[in-house]
Image (cartoon, rainbow, N blue to C red):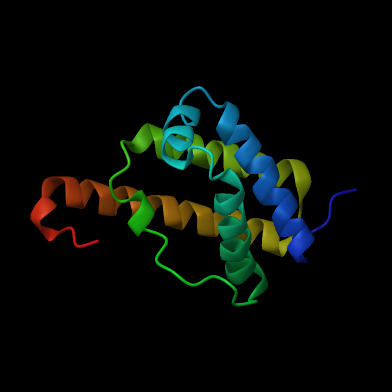
Length: 129
């Protein structure tokens, strides 16, 4: 029986399951694997802390999540696929208020990242990393 996202172990299950899908996805795998290469354990740890902070209000993530994504070769269809995989992962594993919040927050994050990437592509002189 599915439950809500309530603990760090739940966050780890979500992150690990989601990124397993990403690493096997025809569209997303080449981008993620090229950028992350052999640093997947480091990336996953960072994602645990990010989602732990966002969903559990346990502040363990420090940083600017947009900066590493600013110059990725991605377009709207990449974000749509990312969201499709994320929503599917949440729905397969969890139900409840935090599960709903995870989907809502991921959608807002994808929307913001897409618009910022589009803006900086049109205004490269404005990109200060």
